[in-house]
Length: 162
Image 1 (cartoon, rainbow, N blue to C red):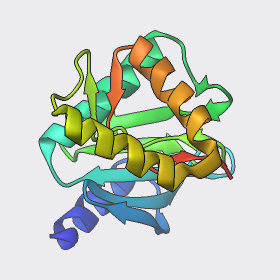
Image 2 (spheres, helix red, strand yellow):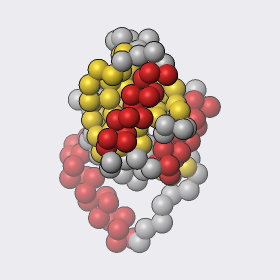
Image 3 (cartoon, helix red, strand yellow):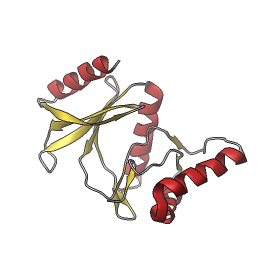
Image 4 (tube, one colour):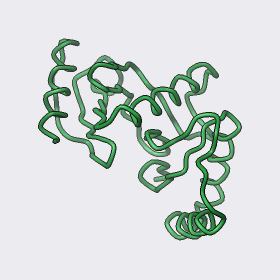
């Protein structure tokens, strides 16, 4: 399946007259690669999504942030450069921690519906994985919720402190 995503990545880079540099990451929703770019530090990150729903959810979140003029939350950077619906591609600035990214699992304007037991497990899991950073992560999630962005899958890889 990733072969198809790699082809979409190459198509995206070619359409914009750029070259693929190398892989930055991957996950359940897609792959992320560095490509030559105009943004500092001379390259940007392109995420190619596996499915339409996560892609459009993430686009909608970035659009909401753009409408609100938000490029950071509590000093945590977020920034989208471009997107391509046909290829399900998002191009973002490459950021150093602290940052917030990967909104493919987020819900816009309504929270996911889970039982109280699931929410308790969610709280325990996040408290464990964020440790002493959990109060700050909770503040970031609260500010996102104030914008109608319900990020139910936070992790130290998408809310990065250091």
